[in-house]
Amino acid sequence: MKKLIVAALAFVLSFPLAAQKVSSEEVPRIVLNAFKTRFPEVTGAKWEKEGATGFEASFKMNKESYSAGFDLEGRWLETEKPMTMKALPEVVLSTLKSEFNGFQVKEVESVETPDRGSLYEMEIAKGKETYEVQISAEGKVLKKEAPAPVEKKK
Image (tube, rainbow, N blue to C red; front, side, top):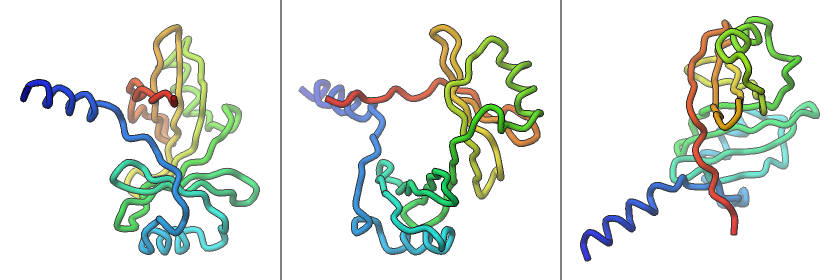
């Protein structure tokens, strides 16, 4: 019986915690204040709880879509903005061609973080191979990993 319980717990914990939509009233005041300090001109953000560790706001600013993540203490983690391939810097395009030749780029985002500065995040695919890739503004590959499986909605 003990083995069954441990196996069931391991199975449940192996699934990533999906983002859950929440109202702004459910977001801790410290997180709301941090968001308002960082983005004072933004109103009407839509919030999601990101697992047990933070919150993400989706919003429009200057007619463009953004998302920003904050931890439970209100520390800013990152801001993401969707973008096109054409808008990527030449050095990033060059790295994509040389390091990931033959891969198709599915999604592109510019990302700003407090510790790594500006970078570019892409989902790339070639046949059945799919990766999430991060490339610095200087063209250095920072991360290449298979994306986490997406939990299907029932």
